[in-house]
Image 1: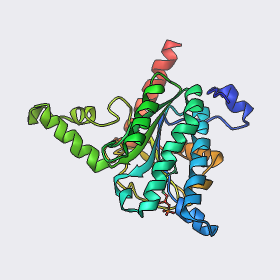
Image 2: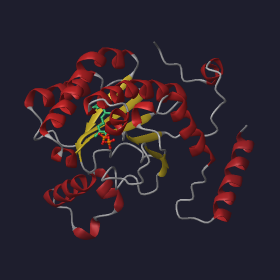
Image 3: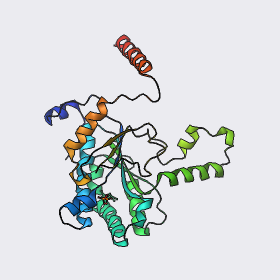
Image 4: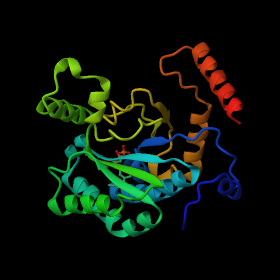
Length: 265
Ligand code: FPP
């Protein structure tokens, strides 16, 4: 299956065009366990179904024209889950790399890892690095896999590295800190989606998410399919992002941009 991210493709999919497509969508894939419990299944079944859904959403994101997707696959706090579940989540990542890498590569997905590989079993850590290396030239979609990731941990490491680099305190700006984050070369997420009716960031992209729009839904992650994702993008399109400014300022900027555009046509 190939992705064609054009209006023509959207027409063929019989989806109304999206007014505004977020460039970067970050997702907290929550509710796998509850999805399974609801069906009398073990939690592992929820994670497997959640993995299936992840395939759907990556494909949908590329179709809809999203350029960057960041997923929260394993947090630094997830180590406190029962050992069997931790092992399962590690195995799932390994399985995703083994089974999906070829196809993801063919589809132009660039895989990146954000988080700490220290503490991850050596074989898996190597596979993660190889998957990133293998897909590094792909341009259609950047998939950041947050695995063994914690937002506070990321900030602590950034500060440590800034100190190690000998940068003077008065020279440190937001841009300096940004340069030391895992996502230094990427724009901040425009939209953070959290499934399963929770309203927390849970230590996910706490620096980068300062101005992100947040979308939450009651739907559990395994059921948050392509049309639910589309709905989230439509909702995003209707939001007005002000970045701390007033409505009048935003209106003025939009008017100016329209005039410049008209003059250049
Ligand atoms: C949260 O659901 C989900 C996770 C901690 C893991 C998310 C993992 C996947 C969707 C599979 C894809 C994984 C990789 C590694 C690519 P939960 O278990 O907290 O659900 P609950 O809150 O209902 O118990």
